[in-house]
Image 1 (spheres, rainbow, N blue to C red):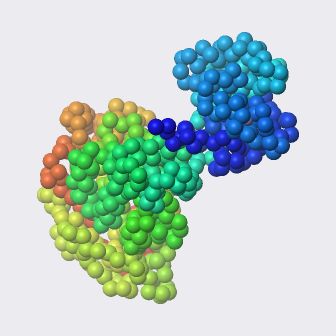
Image 2 (cartoon, protein in one colour; image 1 turned 135 degrees about the vertical axis):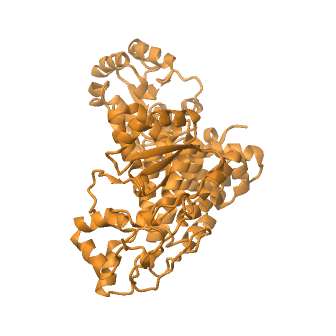
Image 3 (cartoon, rainbow, N blue to C red; image 1 turned 180 degrees about the horizontal axis):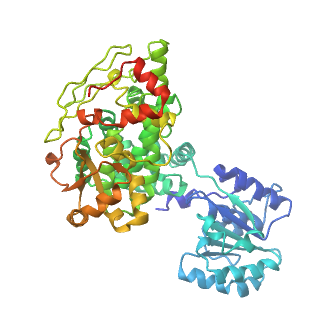
Length: 583
Ligand SMILES: [Zn+2]
């Protein structure tokens, strides 16, 4: 069976619908007889770079070209070029292969062979042009300095920034076009029309799933569709797509989002273990989870939720208000930073757990504006507890529910000494949480300097928050220690300066334990009051106590006191709300 990607490869500029800014310009150049000697097409994979180059070659050589510059798509020349069968006038070179480099070296001579006929054009399509060597570029430069008539070079690359240095003199001689990433909506609508021609029924949700998996590549979208149809003839359903592509069900991603929203950090391990058991590609899960967070943020802000299925969209809308937009943003930016590192990592499970635990430990940010509004008596904005922000009691959490209006913080009289074992997480719920959670509120109003300053080692949230910066900082002085720390997850902190780290590899445990003195010294600049680290091996999920979210000692930490010193407005807010600590 001929593949859909091949069967539906565009035969005209008009067919390359998404990249109209490029195809219209090229078509116009042909119609006016003003074709350049060189073009550079930049863009992500699957966005139509070589397709455009082929259509350009077709149009230049078409026997019945339209006045508007479009190739006919029917003549012998068009058919030959379109089908990729031997055509003397189109030379495709893959610069990524060794052969490609050799080809490029020979280009100079080969380009001198004129096109095969009087009216013919010779088009060299050089794919992955960023892989060309400097010598190859030099050879090409010689050609482009005195281009033979009716010879066109089309360079295609996914990474134009890599070309910049070695090919600077060339770049000034070619016309550059940047192709845009194909949106999920565009992929869906193209798929729908292709499937309609194929007389295949398709669920809109199934199209959305393929659109997401294709990640901006039309070619991928079509070959994914091929894969699905190979197993499930005749109809494209969500189940078929999931089966064929091993996609992580969106329900799994929502379940994890719920864990994060409920601050059930301890449940992260079981959830990730379940994904691993199911043989889920964690990279795929991570990117899907990112889509979910993005969708939740969009739902939060009343925007378009993107390429999610109807069901998921409804689920996200129903969850509105559970995670503050600020936290969703922080999660998105953390995911963005994690993704490139994630793909290369051999410790994906640990990285995923680390990220999700951190998300689950994110404070419910309380906008300082809400606090101030509360003071001035404007509205009934109870900090963090605005209407429509339900806070379902999560299992294992002691929710202390406050009244709607700002109330004085409940004075804690629980034991002041750190418990021997991590205490059950104590959520200090919204209205009482203002002072306690003020560190994140301050992050929003920028009290904390943007450069990382020391946080107290007894505040697990704060430790998790500076962890990446710390590892990056440690790396400058002690790269080996940093590499070990990078693979560790802070899971518990006590008031007496002991930080418990969890690692997956015994070797990392051993390394960190051996070097614990040096590690503590190196970490000290970021984690104030750090005395000692304990390194524990992950594995037995039951053994991992849920990280205490807001323990007495965190309440008693000096964060608040230092914040009060630094910010008079916050200080006044705390005073007005009687948010003080018993000490
Ligand atoms: Zn033609």
